[in-house]
Length: 153
Image (cartoon, rainbow, N blue to C red; front, side, top):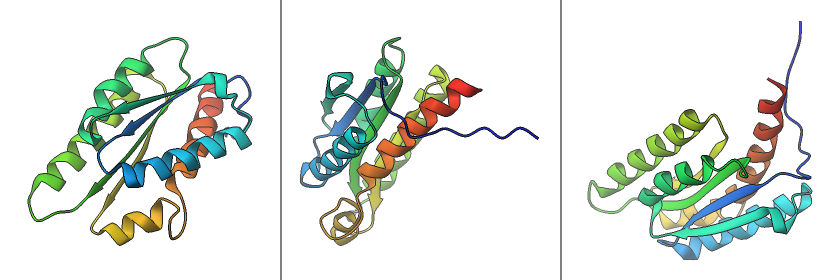
């Protein structure tokens, strides 16, 4: 039996990070966690591009554009969609989720879903490092691991 898995060596990897400006009081912390973890994994700052989009709904089109670039190994999408009083939450969360997945499938590159979809602001704070773990860190680790795994397949 042969087992394949990606490692966490980030040296020489080129990564684009897309960040939603909407709810930036959350997404800035996700970005900081992501950047710190990429540095820890050995990804050079010169190999990282950060692009801001208006909201999480705009992440997929920018992700697809970056993922199509030969110079980009992975795309990380960071956003925060917090439930409100209307159906808008479901529409944005569903659109962002499906679009990010499509960008990955269409390009064969890792396009990482680092979008928080929470019922409350308190839950978002628990996932951006203000009061707990930082999902930006998880997104960085996933991106590097998937780059390395896909190269082995």
